[in-house]
Image (cartoon, rainbow, N blue to C red):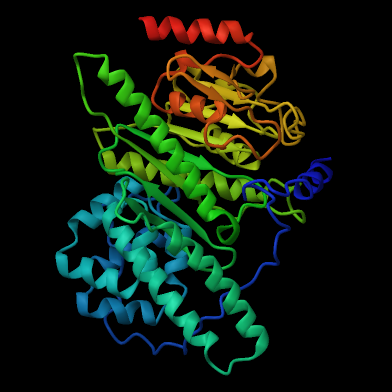
Length: 456
């Protein structure tokens, strides 16, 4: 059933923004940037020490923990050669990342020489290792991005075969989309690249604002047909709109208060998993991958912030809502707010199964969105029995800001600037869910509730 609905969505969005299903998905491809086999490692190979890393229940540290412990003890001058002799090591470390808190301690204990050597030898590792400071990850990922674009450009200008050049062209388009999305032309907020995978359809996370000190942090999680090449720019625009909506509301509340704090926000345009297409949207495998990487990103943020924790929200769309609910039911961490729109459900039975403080879960369902109520992957989060609150998306008039709000009609319209959905996302993400009027409430009630606030 979900596949049939996906086909309808994929063929009915002409003229809409490039959110999910803006075009039929392209075939998967592998990186064409290759290198000669590295020489054997001639430096010392040390037995791993426990260091800051814990051990598994079996008494053995993971490959990632063992390798990071070794890297902390070999001479800085041998780190590049160490990676050259082990071409699969980086992927294995990233696949078996130690807890972010332990990585943060490990990185902090490294001397400056080893840190620099690691950044030079493997920007991919440093740029994607949860627990490494965000500014360093941004620099490493931009280095990796620039280097790969240069390699692909050289390949495009070479006498390589047509098939190789076509693949290189597609990869170059994907990476160029990331590069263009990082440009802010000197206009705030700052943009940082905290996740980058240049292989396959690619993965990336671009942050607007400063994750190190923002009072409110929001993760935007996308769903099916969402690729870096096709939608990275749109997703960053959506994160930018959410950023300014949140900041606008904070400024409004602070202007009427004697306790002005100048609170700040950061939004994360997160495409951290391989979103499904028509060939695999009926399976939960991609959501399983997404749940792990999303949980890792949130745990990484919490590790970086230590005792100064921000208010963390997740706004998840469609298949991404399945991944988000799986992360929040299977991992041991809490967030402060969750918005689910266009959701096909998840194994979670109710709000009580989700690690969201105070049951602060809201569900939005556009009138002509065919995905909600499908319960394809589990209970419908919009059902009364699930226990979530209703998030209005049909439009109206905001009496506080004196602005009309457009309605979301289909599956791909929740993130439209000026919509009621975006207004409600912004309020939810700064802890003002009290101003969200449920879907279906009469327009008079909506106007009365908002005017009551403005008078107060």
